[in-house]
Length: 259
Image (tube, rainbow, N blue to C red; front, side, top):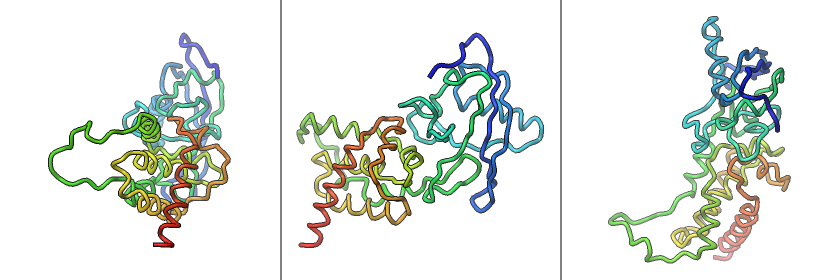
């Protein structure tokens, strides 16, 4: 998507979701973002807007951020209907204003999912993801000295797939993009990167059962293979991991029934 050259500033109109807390009624409020440098990141643009709001004695727009390097998963805004904005494989903090045009009207919303209640404005509570990981997204390792790294061989294909799954940063864009607000891509990535490795085998069945049950208990929707999750994922996690997790879950369910 083309944008404005870096030799001129931009003026944009922002329709921003404002909500005082999770119990309050929210609404869109319109702001003007003026004299924006096209080389700014999207979050830097919001910083500028907030500085103007604070200077006028108004409440700044609340939004999540931390590393601003695309690796922590904290940033996340639905921009004109697209989680993280118009560019693929890009987090909101990596999105630059040159991706837009002078005079554009941008609608900014939080992730929309019952399992991600709004904390304030564009901030949501993604604690459900933490609880899913706590339900099985780990391996049990004995204490003591670290084992020799080469003592347990890992096939290269499995190692590559595990690394691909482990790239998930838990931002929640997959949930925000899915019409069912499903967390299947996130759960599949977190389960698969362990289930593919020898160290993850002892708890493989328990892991996938526990994480899926926790996901369902948190109120996420079911997966109906729309594929929107893969398209929105800033780390390009493949939906093939969902199929892999489904196979593991079916096997684990049968083992539980007949054990």
